[in-house]
Image (cartoon, rainbow, N blue to C red; front, top):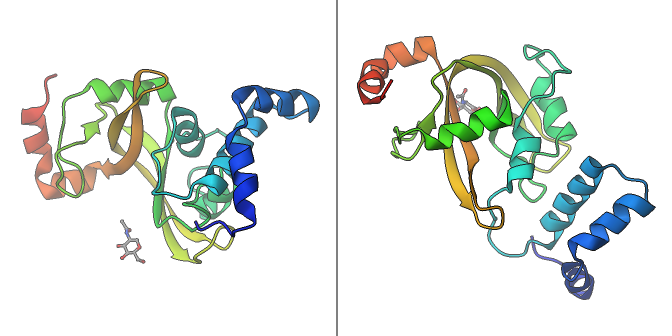
Length: 201
Ligand SMILES: *[C@@H]1O[C@H](CO)[C@@H](O)[C@H](O)[C@H]1NC(C)=O
């Protein structure tokens, strides 16, 4: 995002805000921790002038993990939840996204599993050993945030994720959901045999 010239000094000022100020916002504006976090994400999005930075642990978690409010088979799932959870790329619609019904810590543990190939063939994914339920969202219309419309597909399968190191918290964390491989697709590919061989059970 290119900030207009006049916005730069404001951006610089905001950059100087320390976590204490966010705490101040939370207390004095009566915002919940989650709202404050969203506001921080929002500011970060606004201020991000360079290349996209990977999501933080909290941002990934908020965007990906399902709250048990809406049925996963709802055809409007994605269009509604992408808005609710503010999933976008500098306010542009993201082409695809996965929501997962899993405890975050379980997902994080997958980062310790050995590498398996991702959907695109890159050998850098980690795979769940259990079936995980989720929703696959595929953009059908729109370019900018709040106009984004998605096709929602309920999926149950083995989840492929990539992980990365987050320096400030010194943890390996899930970075990106690559796929939910449904069993039929998996068997059809013949890849199940390949993966079984690779897996240390
Ligand atoms: C997502 O949508 C695109 C374009 O409409 C389509 O080509 C693609 O096959 C879809 N992907 C999946 C996994 O359904």
